[in-house]
Length: 324
Length: 284
Image (cartoon, rainbow over all chains, first blue to last red; front, side):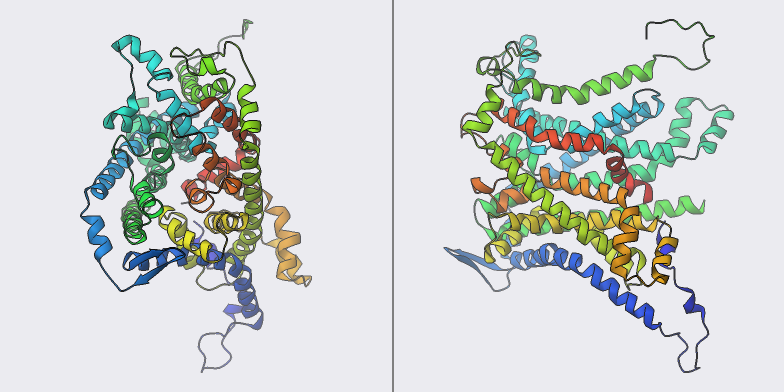
């Protein structure tokens, strides 16, 4: 959408070349000065980003291939080794964290996309108090995840939680959902869905509002019922928007940390330990920087691959839709 | 609502139907946990541990708030978060506007490459940054300090801010700038007196996103600022209380106060937030 503006060039460029020896017109002095100015403007921001994100990422990868010895007042890197990766990739705990993170991501994102789209459809039809609804939906998005984790921990508490108060008369005993692996996973998913479905809904609503109304109108005139219009016309048109929401959510969910760290501490056992929690614990609690960096690097690699795969599929899809 | 209108009913326009009913259900689902947080903050110790909690506190009390701010030093966490978030937001906006302007308007080579790289960086999982960032800050002696966290947050939030600001700057007409150019204003002067006033909505969006991100960030803060004196709100709330007892009343009182500024900010600048959230989806 913005690419055509990128190519905007000043009219000077169209001037005929002065000599046959230089077929490409040389940039004018002003243009070069502006380019220098551009780098000058951009460099403080880019330097900060490189120093604090790019450099650590590279360092993290280096660390994951090194023997790291932590001493009292420092650490040492020595040699190149695949040891960290082989230790990590062969450990049951890592495999479990990978499985858990992948399943959790797929499960929550699917539910969030379905619910989010449904909420967006309701909001779109709503004629009154839409502003209030939008405001309400923004609150979970802005919520400190640690706070919502503590809140849900209290709700799920096996003695004085609301959930227990509601369920225990029905089942006849105290209910502690955080005590069993499957229930704890579901409980965490509910907390996650509560916080992020509004985000999906707002994106989906923006997409719905932007849909070309003439196409939808044409389908209606052709006698399509509301159900058919939604499945056959609107949903396919909405797909690119939902795809962006999926991308954001998948990447976020793969870095899942705050919620398991506070709500379940990765428990019971290691059942709700995500890749990020595992990596963080190995680095900051066990002080095993080599294996920790290996976990972090593999997580980052998976995210990168997901991103690239997604872009490829997305480009192909949007490409065919645009030419159609 | 109760007055009966004596006009002919408008076809297809019901006052209250399935849409409204569904909207109410959605609103209740979203609001209920938030209500529970606030209601619990006003409950006394006996009610907090009761196995049959009530929706409305029987004897509302301010004891939890007193506890959070007198017994525990929660005010300090709020001050820490405020310092880090405000300084970071200011830095991100200054650096972000300059970079956004350069990438939107000035003939910098490799602009699209830079923009793609920024997008990739902003999607990177933070856990991969925690350890090297910790070691970096330790080497320069900035662990448990404001400047360390500000540096980290500035870098983490700049990519998104540059995207937002650059896209916004591209949407402003070029004419004003060209007039400034012809009048001989320097690029910096042009940015300050011509671009900034027009870019205000974009600045709001980038500023609010940065502020909210700093106010809620947990992983990096936990890794580099775990000393009680430098804890931010999320770290303070996560590590509140002892090993065996979690003082939920105190935590929720503190959390309600901590959420207040951010809730107000988001509600007041609703439009800016929505435009930021949907920028990626709509612009592609």
